[in-house]
Length: 246
Ligand code: ADP
Ligand code: MG
Image (cartoon, rainbow, N blue to C red):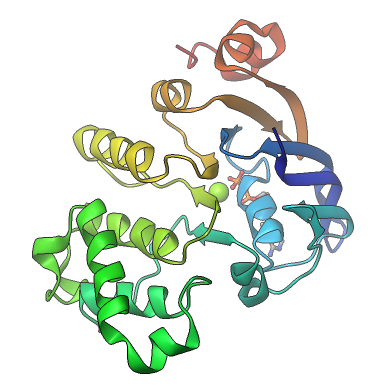
């Protein structure tokens, strides 16, 4: 299978502090790859680099066989990458539907004719996304009026609406109770079928149920990569996680 995303010897330094210390990571097309690691190990920093929000100090990022190192976020969107944030980032002053329409309008599949003349094409695509994320009946609600869990679903919907083939999800269940988190993860599993997923998630049971492959980042280095079974059996990982693994 082809490689969708490859990181080669990524380092990141903020001033004198080295956060990432030579990260190699390979995510195959269609794979669900989880990145786990203690707080402060550099997971969000790595996502910022992949998503073009900041630049690595050294190393290379290859997306669908194209070197995208230091490519700005808006161009990465055109290359098939979407990212959801650890904190929700929807337009609170717009309705659910208008939020999704904006994402569809910016998607790589919408043609200029769709944008100018065929609003029905855009509306239908937005409706499909809202149905997928369970918010079709909240279409006209202002995003500001959504519950926390609903606004996270909308955030996922915006990433899906861009038509991206590679999705980066940073702690999509942060701040949710267990029932909400379970629903959100089921939603992620359903709506990302066939897409490539790189996800940061703290709930180890959820990670082990969802991921095909897990990488463990500790102090800016990947200390292990493998199937959930490999990772659960790895003595180095087990000692870093002290009983949190299933
Ligand atoms: P994680 O997502 O794994 O919890 P982060 O990537 O958010 O970890 O942070 C890793 C480390 O990098 C932390 O020690 C954090 O304080 C530091 N860090 C993150 N962003 C910056 C920044 N812009 N400037 C300086 N230090 C930063
Ligand atoms: Mg983080």
